[in-house]
Length: 454
Image 1 (cartoon, rainbow, N blue to C red):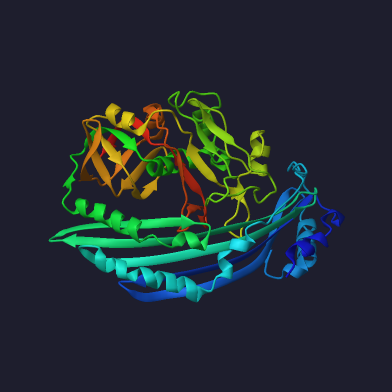
Image 2: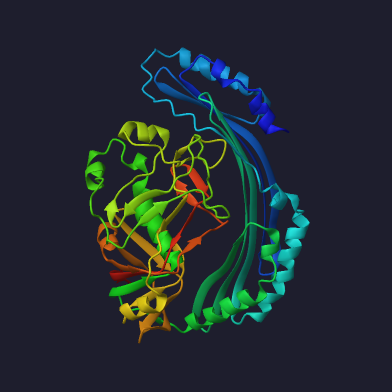
């Protein structure tokens, strides 16, 4: 089906309404999982559908449909609905015409072109590795991929199309020695199938290091200096500050607006936090959002100063700011809401070994199980190490590190020169009923002068 041609034939300007736009998505995904060497699930899922929305008489009207060749009929239904309401002033400011952008360029490497049997065969080839890993009590091998094409057109003339291609493979083991257990996982994010091959040495080295945590001591609870790896920096940035930057969080809450006043010094002067959707080859890739706003580099914090928020057209309208390219929906069944793309702390100039020297007696956090945010945040790490004599020393077991967002942002003493953006094909960000949405996060290793560890 030629989706671009369908939209080319659709004249949105002929409808007598304040604003209308259409988003069509075509996706193909597949997955499989081995549990203790047995293939327990596998499948493919093709999806094609459209989301239509219309603003008239002071209200939004939405519809999602799989009948993508009947969009004109769908719009007419919404218009009848809208005009049956009591007329109200149209307070929504119609967005600018952001031009025509066609960026379909990943079809050649699309995972949808590769037979599911070939993907499962690749997984099967890795199964013997689990027998080479010591102390394995339970093992899982998981694979997932997604190829998505997205098309958009609005009544102001904005058009776009782009495609998104990703896959991930994850090896998870629960290790057991005596009564001691330790669970950890190696994962690899790729945009080409060939990048999933020849990972044997990386996987074995990863789980060889994991063995050390079976005999690791449990940390004594208290406050410590902390060095976060780029992965931990990313989840901290996403959970502790990224969600706070989504402007719908401010809507109807004057206290929040006061608390997060633009121009306020809210972090260390070495701290700059950015959200930017145009990093191709990452899980946060969103070059144009679901309202036709182009991605831009949005500084949320610049040198410790609160400088920006993430917006949809609607929230920008209400707060009298500018759209930022952050109106996103998980699929064609949902309306776009304010969401992150790739959110990160900008890299600094401090070498990693200097960060360790500055954090003498502290803890280094390498990866994590899960994190949550708000005015306070928590991150549950998987691997952590003591820092002694300016170097990584013995592994330690840590249940959680936590802190106040405001306090921690001001306690960041230095940012490393080892910037990395972390992507994942598994899961994603959840907000309201829309989950999971692909995002990326990251930054450099960072030094925090004090955090609560338990």
